[in-house]
Image (cartoon, rainbow over the protein chains, first blue to last red):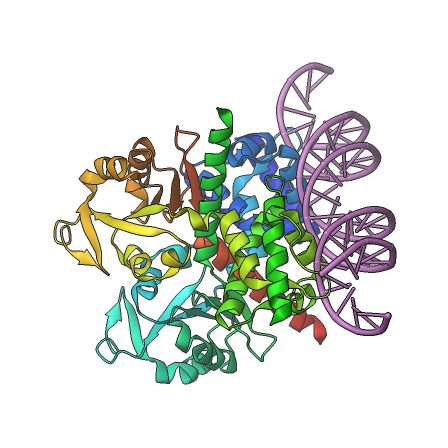
Length: 234
Length: 234
DNA sequence: TAGATTGTTAATCGATTAACAATC
DNA sequence: TAGATTGTTAATCGATTAACAATC
């Protein structure tokens, strides 16, 4: 127990040193995955982990883990490893999880409802403030505890509530119009499930596209590839 | 028109040359995106495109496009560009889109229904043969034209119908059991929406994980980063 | 033939891995 | 102190870009 406290002390002394801004994009892309594994370890009650143990769990090299974590300010401890809680907090901060952004979901179809019901948002510090749809039958109701508004009110709502994130689950045909409305209302990031590339005039609006189809294709590719290897065995 | 025919002739003569198997993984990862853009161009009625035009549309370098497409057998034509139809067909083949795999969706919740209703599968040559759920109220019904079976029948069904792809949209608690059932029944690839890493004994079962949370985190990161840049302006 | 655009080589860049001295 | 494990340098590897000769 003493050694853990000692580690903690060390971390706190070092916290100011954290360098940022020059983290390579390859590392940034890996951060959500680190975050996932570390959160799981934390929930499992683990306090510390070495790069070598984590490398086995995550199936990457220990060297890469040390190199990666060092990008934002070496706070491992020689002979001990990394403090999981501190590491998770640091990565959360870097990823913006601690910012507490507000989000709206536009489109209350199957996908919109699925997103309304997951605990994915809360875990990442994002609050779902409202759902929007054009179906008068559901406007005014609540879905998984989230109030449904008419899409006509979207612009005013986003502006007034200073919404940071807009989740787009409307049909392709409506996607551009809805996206533009949100962009105009000052929404900073659009999480786009509409299966199309959005071209918005506002260069400051960030668009993160979900292309499930790309993932399905990758799976097909891997299946086909594995089958070919199998064939070559004979 | 004559030149187009000429190009076509050239392509057919060359079709045999296609090299495969040594395509770098960085290129493989980009193929679904190429496929998307090329399909759109094809639907827009375009017949040919140059690496330089495509580079502008896709926001990558023309050099990369030529390098990429060359990996699986240079079939552009100097002075003309690439035949979109042929290129799309080639990429489709490489990705396994032409294999015509059969899939089942396990879990008929919001996400399962969303997946049952999209045209994403058909476009990629994947047939959705059946839905599975444990809710007796919906077993026996049809959802978006797909028959719903009880999950108890999953093993037999997959085995009998030689299902290649299992789409996993059940709660975390049931994910492992369902995945193992499918793996045991010879399902070759699992498309995993359960937000957890599946550890299956069978090393031949391919798992493609969807981690929407990672994408949401990336969006948060980009928003935070853009905000910081904004701050530094002053 | 002249113009356009590929295929391909060579140069650059960035990312990964290996190794080990520093240090807890 | 001895053992463990990081932080960091240097070596390797792979991916991207630039350039241009080949060729349609």
